[in-house]
Image 1: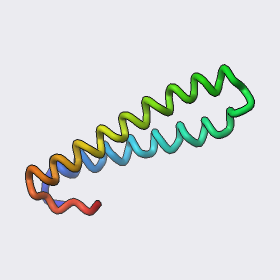
Image 2: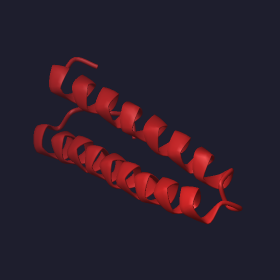
Image 3: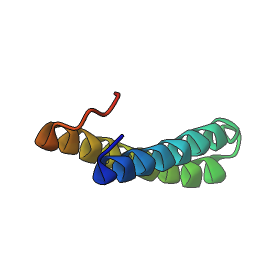
Image 4: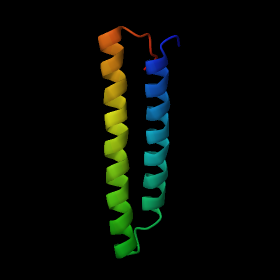
Length: 71
């Protein structure tokens, strides 16, 4: 990948995706504890939103700059 901005965006998306995956995994283990589940659910929703924003930034960059980013 020749574009440094695209590489940064891909890296940010990868980090956000892993954070979201980890949050969902933890959430799935807390279904019996209402309080802990609620806290983890809020964190998971925030991580999901962060992941979505990172993906949108990557896609916008790809379109705006015609970067050849595998999707």
